[in-house]
Amino acid sequence: MVILLGSLQLGILYGMLALGVYITFRIMNVPDLTAEGSFTLGLALSAVLTIAGHPLLGLGAALLAGAAAGCVTGLLHTKLGIHPILSGILTMSGLYSVNLLAMGNSSNLSLINSTTIFKIVGTLLPFLDKDTVKLLVSLCFTALCALLLILFFKTHIGLCIRATGDNEDMVRASSIHVDNTKILALAISNAIIACTGALIAQYQSFADINSGVGILVVGLASVIIGEVLLSRRTLTGNFLAVLLGAIIYRFIIALATKYTILPAYMLKLVSACIVAFALSLPAMQKSLAVYKTRKEAQKHAAAKTNL
Image 1 (cartoon, rainbow, N blue to C red):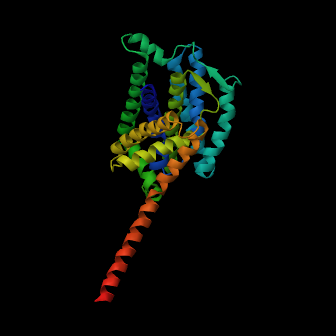
Image 2 (cartoon, one colour; image 1 turned 30 degrees about the vertical axis):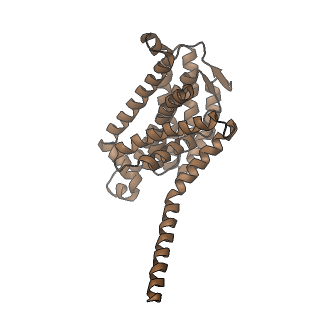
Image 3 (cartoon, one colour; image 1 turned 60 degrees about the vertical axis):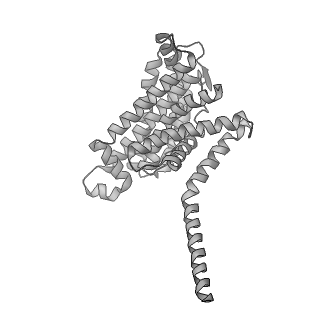
């Protein structure tokens, strides 16, 4: 029960990460590798400011820093003509040094004796136990993030971003500044991802410089699992599906860990396999449909021959 509750809490928190990854991966059609650096950036800033006694400021700083990281990737791509994936790799690589600098050249920081946002809410709501407080805070932040994104993508600017991802040439012909929409989308995506890192740091009461390694695969797995199980044509439905995918992903990891199906160090491989399988589903479905069509054609040909 404790493992399932912890997985639910983490699944809801990582739902924010999945929303950020969804913006670049599905709406903009670019897997942005900046995520691995911006997640750790938010985690590092949140840890440092929480230790200094400013947990709420840590969340705000993570949002702004993540947006700045996304802008750097966007500028490298749009203004310098670098491929978007390479732009993300460059920013991610540079952020490793920035993150170390933010953490005072230390690879990890402990927040055990610091006042986090979870402890503040626990103090305000003393009648709730610790796990319920963590679940409530995680749910509030993720729900607020999803609601704001749903409202934003219904605005003119949000629709321009969606149109840019669908057909860049058409949007450019409509006198919409494509470069600005790309930079804004990357900024929003990485701001959300950095905020997730900030919350994770305060949730687990420590920050590690390597926490962002493979985090993009986690986000992609959540997005794809959600799409496979609960795909919807509306953006709101897709956001909800992504959140559900993040929770299911954490349950899968928890079950694999609980029953020692695989050792802990194999979890990244499991995540990669989940993503690879989910991405290959359309191709497998197409191959299966072709196979069935051929079988039916052979049956009809055999029936005509017998006649």
